[in-house]
Length: 167
Image (cartoon, rainbow, N blue to C red):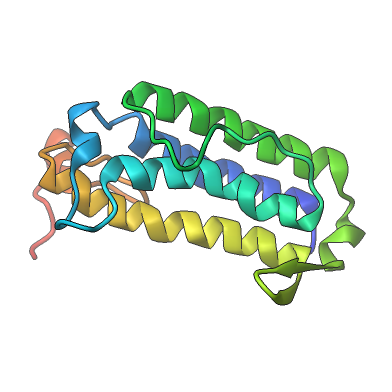
């Protein structure tokens, strides 16, 4: 749980930059990749990451614009990446501009439970990290080169002139 606005902003900016890096790697053709019939596609996951911060945070009383219709996934990967970048900036601006540190302890209804706002901010980030992991698997299945998120990806080891770790 976050106890200060600044600690959230620092982590949000780091994590959203990692998400932007993944989204900027997507291609229009890769958006239809899914693990199997009936599962979310890569495009649906990317759009979900773009829409969910707003959906979650308006429940706390923050005022944030919706990035678009959550049910209609854009056909262009660049459009999703641009919408996510806007959303990430808007989240930081809204939290910084509309709350004080004291409001992080205020309780809000989150899906039928009472959560402190600082916990909701933590959940927004962890939700994003969870879906990024799913996306990297689908990206590999789609033939994309996956950028490292918390360290070098397999392809990046070779680019650095090093052997990738043994699997």
